[in-house]
Length: 495
Image (cartoon, rainbow, N blue to C red):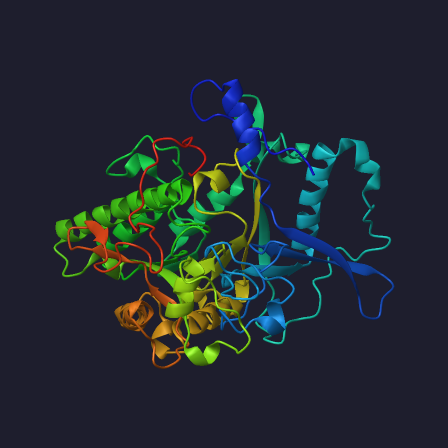
């Protein structure tokens, strides 16, 4: 165990109580594994790294089927449920989990190893001698492994971080890439990577994230909230830019139905409130741009929010499960046979050209560089850029996004090939709305492979955001969909 990052206060003077609170609530959030592997036909070894959103703890493994009750074969030893009080291994349901992780080989794996070394050297100075010396005498450090079966060409990749000099020994040759704040050096390259790729986007953006809040300076209310990063505003600016040039552009965002845990808790309700402020600000500015340009379109033609859920039938509940207490949330879920799929991934795909996978959420904690420590990889295949192929990419990023959408949307549809098209927007809207009706219905008669539904908000032509009728509370809970500001929690805790 190592101390949490020391907080660099973003305004005013840091007090003793706040410092102690920060050392408790901020986290080392990076998730990576580095290992050695054989090089066929050689005595040398090579590096293989894994990076992304998956924590090394119970319940993280899942399949595209997201079983709620028939989990004994895969989860009898790691049952996990943090959203439905009263649920247990004996009763179910388990908490379905959606995440994204990447396997990395070649020079980028060496950079992930360097991050580990940088952190170890700072936070375990007395154990530097325990580090294994990785040298060219024993390792082929440029080896990128066997070519993938797709034969889609090589990758260009870069590692990004959110971290401070309190938690990391920075390379002195790269200090000019860092920012400084009150004597602390800060690497905020994840945020800069997101901004750069959003600005370069030409057709569409697809995001999956555990949280989506920010650009508080641009909100219609609560503008002093401590989440000032610019990612939401950058997305809106890109949408408006494309409107002005007469080009189609759509941003799709998938987030959890509600933060993990009890949706009635003070922290969850406040996060939901900040997310609502972010959404309404984005839709308000998009609606204003539509009106100014006299377009016959709707704000959700350009920006769409989704969440994931699983609905089952009685046939999916195996014999032998105990009945939960009917007066608990677990008892309600046993009756409804539905549960949100928790979205824990931190992913952005731009134009099917570029992909970012990592640990950083779309909030200030992850992107500021001075709060939680994070790591991410950005990558593309130079031989498969859409601009070089008539706007139609054919590389592994495109293949991965199509497979991901097929899992979320119940299968392949030709409309999904071009996410910026109105045809795709309409098809995604149709499929997800149908599943939303299935999810909130009293019973589900037939099984469905669809898991994606519109986030339960109603967006008006003028950009006004309200709760979807019938969704004032999340199903089987007392949690308000619109969220609520606590007025008690420290502002930097939930942002």
